[in-house]
Image (tube, rainbow, N blue to C red; front, top):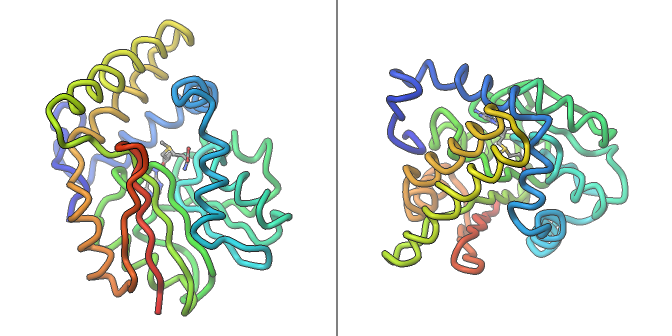
Length: 242
Ligand SMILES: C[S@@+](CC[C@H](N)C(=O)[O-])C[C@H]1O[C@@H](n2cnc3c(N)ncnc32)[C@H](O)[C@@H]1O
């Protein structure tokens, strides 16, 4: 199950998507923290910490952060756990992980969400921040998440979700489709940073609806599956491996 229909202006086949996405994030990586800092009005770190704590991350747990990028989720995870000793970060982009390595003494693994190079039942808590749209296949990815979690383990997936009302949708497009990429270009003078944020918008716009994500989580075997909707914009998908 694709997380969004193929974006034919970027890649003609599903097989070509990972290379395109990796190039995009490798090139935009040095700008990512700065852009998302002002783009979300400085709320990102506090929100990432609050959401992980609220959904049950506790000291002593083994945490896997999939699509760790520059480490923004995992750093907040480290603040809660009190150490990075039990944190594993996975991402296919060497460029994004190079930024994360500068600030986080966790274990780093190059890899894809739908082919996790970990044994069954390895982790207590699995996070994925703003990257579900980039996986090759939702169903396969969620089955992988279920497989690597221990019994009683939790998954927490964060996304920005397009509003359903026409007015909400208009402002969503205006900000994420126009203002955010435009200001990114202006502030960074980087075409790569602009393209990364424009693709951010394109994939949010084309993404499957929240109900499809919830259904895929249930089909993967998760229990107590729910979506917490914050400020009409942020989706927190949470579930338990029974
Ligand atoms: C928007 S960034 C999110 C980074 C970070 N999680 C955060 O909260 O800011 C998306 C990340 O997803 C990664 N990514 C893209 N395709 C992926 C895949 N198939 N599996 C895992 N990660 C992927 C990218 O390399 C990039 O680092």
